[in-house]
Amino acid sequence: MSRYMSSRFDGLEAYVPGEQPQDKRYVKLNTNESPFPPSPEVLSAVNAAETERLNLYPDPEGRLLREKLADRYGVRPEQIFLANGSDELLAFAFMAFCDRERPVAFPNISYGFYPVYANLFQIPFTEIPLREGFTLDPRDYCGLRQNVVIANPNAPTGRAIPVSAIEEILRTNPNHVVIIDEAYVDFGGESCLPLVQRYDNLLVCQTFSKFRSLAGGRLGFALAGEGLIADLERIKYSFNSYNISRLTMAAALATLDSHDYYVENSKTIQSNRAYTTEELAKLGFETLPSLTNFIFTRSPAVAGGTLYRELKARGVLVRHWDKPEITDWCRVTIGTREQMDIFLNQVREIVKGAETDA
View 1 (tube, rainbow, N blue to C red):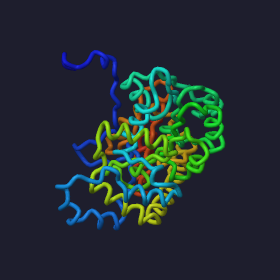
View 2 (view 1 turned 120 degrees about the horizontal axis):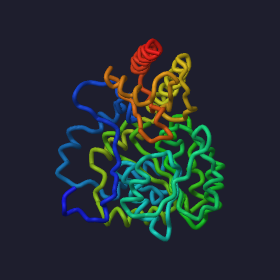
View 3 (view 1 turned 180 degrees about the horizontal axis):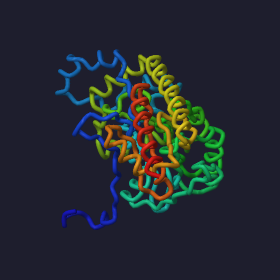
View 4 (view 1 turned 90 degrees about the horizontal axis):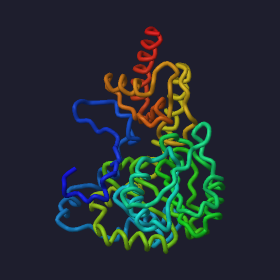
């Protein structure tokens, strides 16, 4: 850090994104990207005619995309907010709704950006411990009298809570915003979007990065009552009016026109998730029930950090954290069947080697 940086950031610990190594080709199962490319319609939409218009700024309102999303989800365009990935969306939400008088609470094991944003914006926060088996008990958030952020399904655990539990959290915190991060909801989860019309304190966040195969396009969106959306718009226009690129909006519009393609991809990922979980169980692994495009798993024979390093040395990337509560575990993105077979074959060799050494 230079001597010019503000002292208020002295203790800031930046978020560490998943590896995107360029040194060689890996089987990449570490950042929950889709293993499938965008639909043919998307590839056609991002064409020469569109690239020739890159000399022009994009529509700051994203009007066409908001209208199409509103039609998809049965809401008004004024209930849609567009952001440069769900990360920017969450940052705007922290800025808009949280401060020293309105702190925020979230699980102690969840998306790593939550405490980073709280520290960046100097917002007091409470990390609520998960229960046995990394389960989230909704009662811990009822009547909390703080803003609440919950990833549902949660990451990195893959576990979810029912919509009825989210409704109880909303009902018992009527004067605070409840942010539900649904980045992974399209892999078997249940969305709480129907609650948006009944609770003006609900903000639902989704993304085009996972289910819709546009991680490189950087597009997130929120659905909420018009009041919360207007608040987010004020923050956006005070920060970056043109936050969604022209090419990303063209790709997103085409994505929504090819919904069936992505539904089939999701079914394949869910099938591969079940297959991988079953094969790991044969090796003695404990894997949490998952409603996402990843699994959270551990081996009784190989420590989490060792498994991560051994797999990386063999050309397979997974995600591991040194946090004491989860240091034995690895998060594994679900890829194609071929990718999962490569992963499983390498795991078998690593486990066999560990058992031989023992």
